[in-house]
Image (cartoon, rainbow, N blue to C red):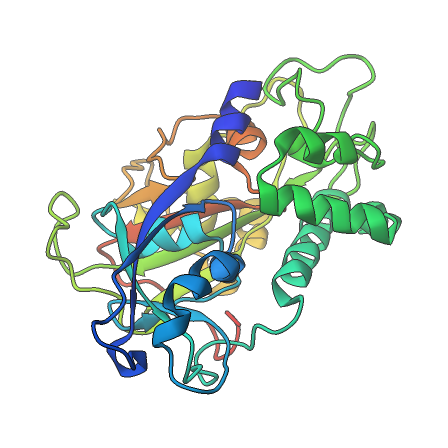
Length: 346
């Protein structure tokens, strides 16, 4: 694993061009747009202290919770900003033009974001990732309250060094982001022997926590400038997909392999899926075939890049995961994506 890669991920930011919604403008002239860099691994509500003073004098009386929309779609505050950008901007735009609101919170679309909701969303995601990797959440549950607060402050400030110092005190260490001198793809030492899934020996994760977001578009993937925007979150399928780490020494699982396990219907001909593999994927995404051709019919983005699908998945997990240890894959495809049961994506 390269320390430089993680540092670049933690430093990643998206330039935002924020306009106050016209219904909330009570002064003339209207306030000018506000430009700000939003950390990729951060969450939009965390920008409120920087944004509110710029628009405060133009707001109508009253108070409400800040929220954002992109082309009319309210943006989910519990999804990292970089993931929202990769998924919703089929053809990336810089700066990203968003509308900011301080009134009329769309509670029917977005869950409420009150008090420390963003912090606890992060902590709960970290617990979920640890359960996927180790089969339990003891490491996080045993952290002191002060360490949890300090960890959250490191995430908010983009302090990778401080984050790693805290992570080093947790046993087992923080999964794919810890032990930075050595990559999962390197041959293991004697102490790093066979892995049992999901609980591991030598403190090594047995599964990789991955979240996949699928969006269908109605035109050629090579020409996405005029693609129809997402008008509802019902048009996006997103699901948590734990991926087993190979038990056999020397076996390399690629990003392509992971996609074939979870979304085989997005390949030109669905590859053969074993019973073990099929059990990992959500039932709505299972498929099997005797075909061997595996050209992927989609675009995959993670941390703002479109990686080669032949990258080892362990390298992706170590270098491109978020601070909560999930690998967030945004997939744009031309095929009909399967639907989740109502409420499954909430």
